Image (cartoon, rainbow, N blue to C red; front, top):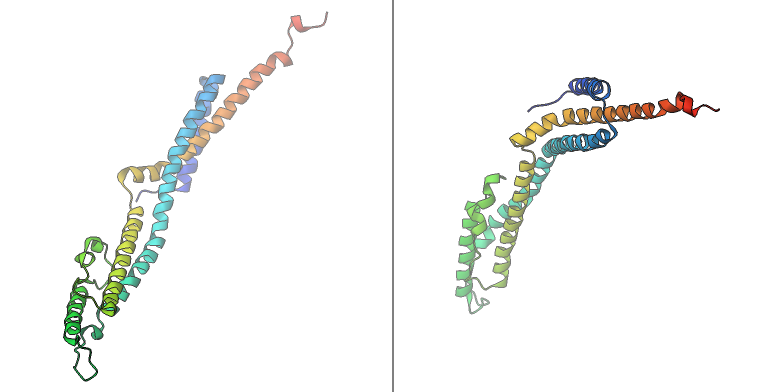
Length: 231
């Protein structure tokens, strides 16, 4: 990663200030209109420098944000594994005198939920991975043949945690992407402090040029001509 040291920025500032004063104040002095036009230049250069500074601040913040985003994504992932691994999903009913008349139908639904949970356990990853944003887990549809409210609630709870995991996984991927920089942003990050130093030197030069013009205007007042002398 390219970086700009403080001594190099100070050197650019000092050299730019001297060079700009020699060129724009002494050898080719700025006019009043030229001083106004300089505002366009130094503000534009400073804006580019600020873009680089903002990108660098975002990159420096990413290492702190990524562990937090990863920890948030691990919450629903752990909850999914706990819920889907419950042995009660695969309960085998034993008929007794207190059993409901539709016990066989309930057993079929229970077996369906058991198979669904086992399938989910296979698809649930062991740890948070950015590649899981399009994992088959998120396309696992709840079994349509299950009508028992308690069984549907068990399936819905796992599905809700899967949706939370997908949302937080996308946030994690966005956080990781914010910490990465393209070639243009790397260049601006490196040049940002240098551009700001040059813009400040240009602004100081503009002030010196304006002071020079004020001194030139004040000279006739300091040295009156014969026409201005009292008769």
